[in-house]
Image (cartoon, rainbow, N blue to C red; front, top):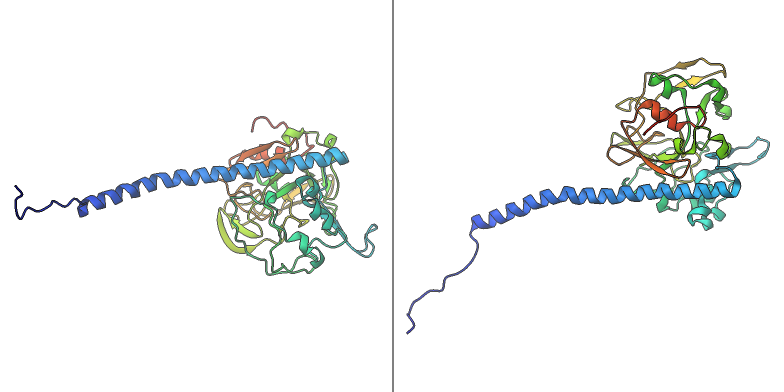
Length: 346
């Protein structure tokens, strides 16, 4: 017999129970989010390493075809013997385009114009994924000044390039770190008329001239060819964006996309500078010491958006991850190709 007036019991959460569930979910998210972010960065870091690996394969194929590695850049202007009235400009990035499945861009690029000439914009504004580190920011500042030949930064950005050729090491790096300057018998003139009489020691891809493998006497596995210099043309200091832009390195076609190793102070306020003015020396340090080379400043120095260091491409085609705490002597040895250094483990 049914009992009149009996009430059904209602099931539900109390406010306290609901708050406990929300708190548990928040804790789980807090625990899982760093792991997800780390997994994403690991994937980006792997892709960055693969980018350099593909560049290495392209450079090896170039060497197999031409029997030399390409020059970091060729920059001939009016009045020079081979270009009496015009220009001839190209860089290693443009020269390897056929070997990274970019033959149409290679064919369309006009070396008889400056790289930044409006006539080359259809090529130089193309974004090539293999030249972009996925850990680097997508949004970058546009320079507000013209380049060396007067061409302004275009409204459509140049194709970014987060990698640069290791052209040379300047005396500042050795002097700033209290290291002996390599023998002057291995020194190279910069071959730049504006810097006549200034000297540096060649890296894996030297400026203005090709490099045969036989010239890399320190060993191809002990000599860097390309390194990360990510985020340009925006200038970053210690992983923080500034409101400044680089004077060069604006894009993958920029003939100044490579650089010579100087080092910077720990706060990036000063980049090393020292000159050797005559082949017999001596070298003189002309600014304060600037011994830090990795992940301090991305203005023509080694810089990556990876925690703890930077990827580098060696002349044997291998890719290594160098710690930001690598010894100055070891890095200097890796950055030069023929100074007789004993590198050891790194």
